[in-house]
Image (cartoon, rainbow, N blue to C red; front, side, top):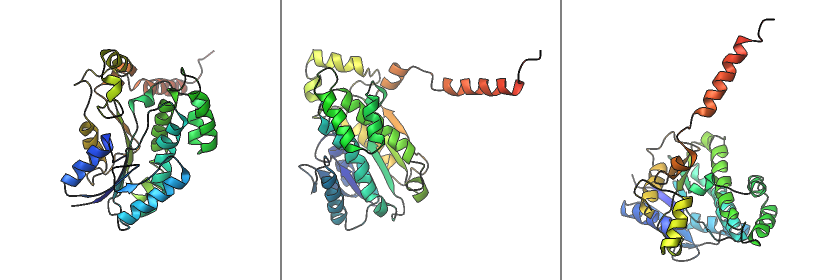
Length: 279
């Protein structure tokens, strides 16, 4: 079954690999990017997002089965906040009503392993409050200091993963039959990372932050294949997840215990059943 996909960030990196694989499989793809794509779209402004969404709908002849949001920046500037968070959320919201008309609507976005790393909570909160002026003001303050500028990127990805998780089970998404998920890559070999990992010193710095014991740095296709499955009709029940396809970095950094929080709650529950000790 052929489907119609809208892919943001389709001009390079993960987005380009995803668009290519989808086309090779016979699907219709409308790519959105600043350059080298079907639709020229600027996701850094509210007006640009709405225009890009409308142009993508027109290019898709009014029918969209899935959206894969790959567009993003990693520079320590306020524009990263605009593109990485609002450029995803507002673009998806603009396409959601059309998506809901599909027989098998799906959405997947590119988050990052950085969603697990140190961030700036006030910036994350501004994102989740959908307050772009406040977010930009905070991001500009972070960008003014070389030591804090990199917190912008991690904050965008933390907020994006939280948004995906919270919205995925809402009436607008799950209630409309639209699985909404994210993928968290490790170090992907793309134009965004080429300069960073080109030298032994740069590669060592990246490896210290994102250790990848399984197969080391990954190709864009390793993420593209997962994005494509998440947006295929075969995915009927995966919702709200950020799937860390990162060579094991998540496990190395966070440890093996993904269940301890639940065990603690179970103990509290049984203690409450026992009641207060007899005097």
